[in-house]
Length: 507
Image (cartoon, helix red, strand yellow):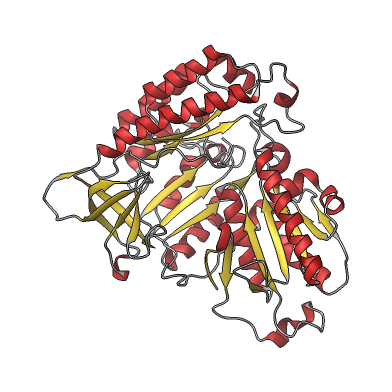
């Protein structure tokens, strides 16, 4: 099976090998003359992307074929996000449109919701849109195949499965097998190391949709990573809602190193692995052992995503973040002391209930002082069942819009200056494949998560090479393979993409 990114952001796979249809036909009703096809559309963060990928891999193993578009699929699944109301409304609107089209064409398609919104809303999703037959929560992804079997075979008419399940964090280790999709092989991969969150920030619904923290074991994570490297993966991103909370109960500190740093050490020892990333952490998790790991582990890239959320101590306390502005700045200082060119990114919320112009000004001043390489800037969105949803001091929409625009302008100004400073420098990239922006070019990623487009060849895919930056575009660098020994070389320079407003992992 091979995987890639399908139309409209859907994760899709195509079988490179399949069991004979007769061996899997028992799953499906007689009117299926070939294996049923499934289309999966994913909303939200990297964790959701990884969940969709694992579901797709498991479905193919059961005999399904994964479709590249929704119109011809027997089953359409939406893997949903609940971080903001807008994400939920997009999924709800999409499902209504799909069901309406299916009714007109009388296609007999099966429709279902997966993930965070499925967990949060449960059975109401089957009542709100007539035609939705499947709702699978965040601890039941691995049950998707058996539920589809029952629906397609007529043993069930509607399935809602949002119950907790012990050990669910270890049931999503499947990955699509490597292959070429539009000339792209799998060079990097996501690996989930844990599920859930115990932080309970007052604005966040994740502890309700993902449950409490549950960590996988170090041996099983290492085994998954080793298998990916054997398939040709060069870079692995470790995923979790708050990865720095990994193994707090399961792995007590050893030699001053937390469970998460013990995991980094174990993954770092895998032969053939070139780079390690992780997301999303919490600023409270940046102890001295993790800061020191950036200087000690060459495979750990010089990139840190530290969700700030606000630069105001008063708002941070109301958010239940557990740190102050000064503590946050001190963490940045320690990281840059170890790696002066560290790329640092963040998440920021504007318009939190009760936020004054003075509070917002403190966020703006902190951004100017720190000079983040990237900022995911969100307008506060009330989420049901969260403490912030009932807090006094809700701001008018026009005030939130104005602050959002001003903060984006500030971050973009900083980013433009940092991008332009890279012209003439040599940067180390891992070549990922044909450029998504220009199919006549190739692209790679710096250690600090910046995309570089250059004139390459198929043989470069999967290689680590130096590229000299000769110009910049909108959040993209352009260059040519560097001549060794000439010019200024900045390996791991901390300039990564500037502002993109999108969903990120809660941290």
